[in-house]
Image (tube, rainbow, N blue to C red; front, top):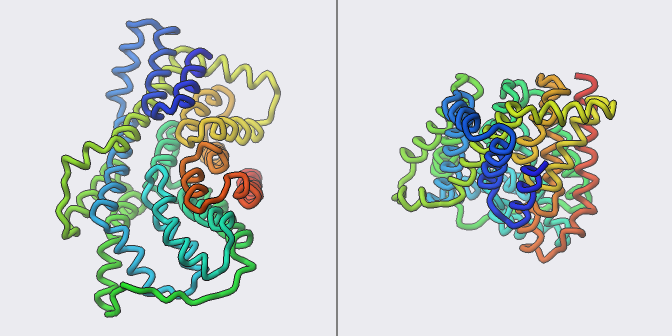
Length: 392
């Protein structure tokens, strides 16, 4: 409990998730295992293939997102795609989803200006603009294999990435439908007049293909060829270096704190899991939950969602929930998927969720005004996850 308290305090003091996870893991280990066994657990974590895969995958995922921004490939992608799509409803929902392919903290701020232009044509108020941007920015992530959230969940529970994605397709479809119903259903249809977009169809298609190729390569290697996620994301990074025509200052990019913060968070999550298991803390917490006689479905939906809401972090919620629930719940695709979705949806409505904060600020809308759209959409999506858990 002391280490969890320190973890929460560090996050409250706005210390990075990676540092908070690692410090709390070391503190728990030193208090419960001592120096000698702490060194042993540390070495086991550093040489564990699953841990190494997660750490390197997290590093390359963040590197890809930074490269996309620095080379302006993301701008090429959105502009060239706009050449083929004229409906403002589609554009206003698709553009945040495309930006969502780059798992960067606060990334909704990148799509907000584009959404703002198209949303004005649909006469959306500021609160609904914020909802549409935040919701569709995140809607693809539960089935997107190149995001740290789902990679971390699969690694911690030793569950197949493909198995998780397949189970979460239904939830994503429901999220798309409810997002459209709440945010866009009653708006008028308009045609978008895109400017500064290459008018030559062949040239435009080439720009679109080149800009999305690194993502295609990474996803295909992960899902079709069954490459380790670390090697697949490395291939995506290399693809960016090959296709871009802009000079990349790699040294400058490697100084980006966000890259190392996410990488450290991956290490800290695995270390915390190993320490929790080695110290017996997971058994104590699991037994305490078991004594409450709560059904597994309640624990898997309630515990991760509450932790994610309090932390404002899916990764943090997963990292804490897995060892807590490991002694009570068997980790199979069915249970792991519900744990992930619960964490994810709890994070979506967390007042400390950076994308939510940035989006509300950009659109000059209070977070509470966005909740009248965000909370119903989240509840419906959670219901879809529970139904999927019960019948599939």
